[in-house]
Image (cartoon, rainbow, N blue to C red):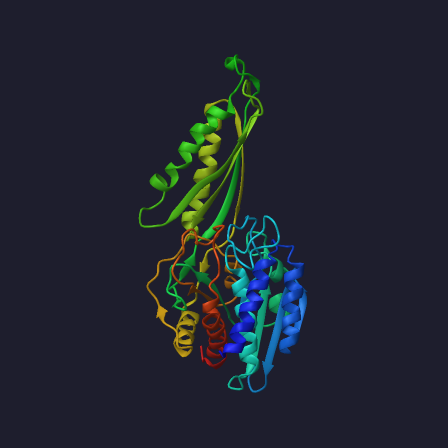
Length: 382
């Protein structure tokens, strides 16, 4: 990548960082991407699955096709960085690097448009609402695969702590299946000084919280991976009243469907039986997604693309218990999701931290890998 393009991409990335938008509200972000695609001379279709965009580059000589995907949304976090391009939208921040991913895909579009060495069709997918708002599902429901055919699909995520510009390609699972649960215990309200007249859901919830932490320790094979974490506890409005109900919300992560099914069955059973022990009922609501799992042939393409782009490639990193809705694309298409090293982690510079910042120095590597993996896929006999 030449210096001028790198400088341009850096300016674009910092603009996006300064103007973050939450999932399903990426109107200005989508407009910005459309403006830059127009400047690059790349045709596109807006409004796919909400504010999503699919840009298409085609060159005769081959009927092969490939998809490249980047996410666009930000997080409901108050940014703590003091930068010339700190978020101007209070309470919203690009704390996961989607500003960098979007910019890298624009960079790949620029590189591929000027590169005569490939033929076929590249679909550049700018996806909204990755952070738990169903963006991938919305694009799929809007017929993205039927309207913009692609034989396989690739994506990347920046990874703080991994050497800048290094491509990490996992064998199989990359990220876990994310899930959420909400459990409400329904008791009987009463005066705090007369507990015998009430059925106290706060006491029962204390027992339930402890019991849920036994699932991973006692119901999951030690050779498998799972997480159960409770992030919210809600109940009560007065210090001298026993409330009628209390609810908790939490997350779970698994990689294997059988482990997920066992975990969910235990959550439900434990909640119902703890409730019965304290003469009350439990309402259990569970939502879950899918694990992000690479396919073998596409893993090899991703690694070969890293080498072709002159980047270091690693195959030894463990999967993460974070989640990604790119998994929904991988359920429909073969593909690969890689981590792109963001460089050393600054203090409090982890993903989803209020001091995180995407490393603009890796934009040439990120755009270069995306362009290289598209060419690799279009040229492959797999």
